[in-house]
Every structure is written in structure tokens, then in C-alpha cells.
Length: 136
Image 1 (cartoon, rainbow, N blue to C red):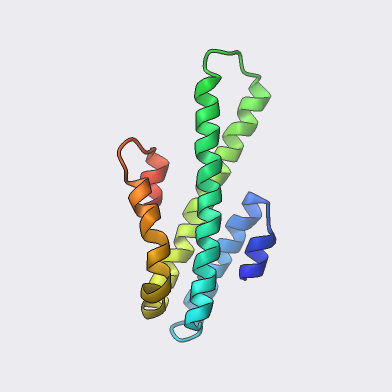
Image 2: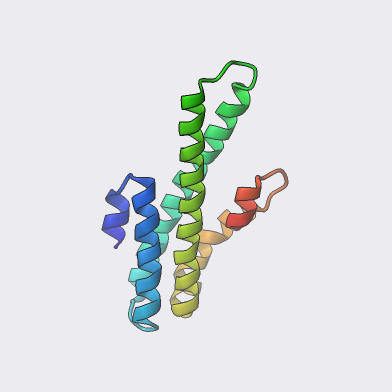
């Protein structure tokens, strides 16, 4: 699963993969993953969440700079589609994180928690978007 996530660039396909992985983690149950597997998946989820967050924040900064300029409707539509896809992707990835926490609690506490606490702190910081607070 980690290799597939790492190799994929399509945001919609990543959403589908994340939903599928969460379902597999739930169906396989406790004890089906080693600590190393949980750590590897958590590290990849962190990388994907960070990349998505960076894209969202870069797009928001670019959009605020273009407020004064006339924007092509097609470009604006594409930008909105990418933003929505990234927001849905982060929600799907957070679902996998939650499932790992639920099903593999001891391994997650040992290896995953330290990866995601900084995201929580950042997303709950003053001035963050509603999307960031939702992710947290």
C-alpha cells in the first residue's frame, strides 16, 4: 500500500486508495500489521498530508494575490477543483490515520502519534483555515 500511495500523483485516485486502505485496516483487524508497517504507512500518510497542505496554502496565497487582477473563469474553475480535491484527499488520509489509531493503537502510539501531533498543532494555530481546523 505504501508503494502505491508513494507512486500515485492523481488526487482523486489517492482519495480512493486512502478509503480502500482504511477499509482494509479495519477488516484485517488488530495484530494484522507490524509496528514497522504501521510506521511506514504513517510516514507516507504524513508526507501526503504535508504535500496536500502545501498545495492548498500555496493556492490560497496565489489566489489572494490575484484578487485585484482579472481571472479567467476556466482557470478559476480548475483552481477550485484542485482545492476541493486536496481538501477531500486530506480528509481521506485523516480517515486512514484514525483507523490506524483505532485498530493498531499500541503501534500507532509508539510510531505514528509523534508524526501527526505537529500537524494538529499547526492546523489549530491562530489564523488557520476552516479546512485546516477540520483536518485537525
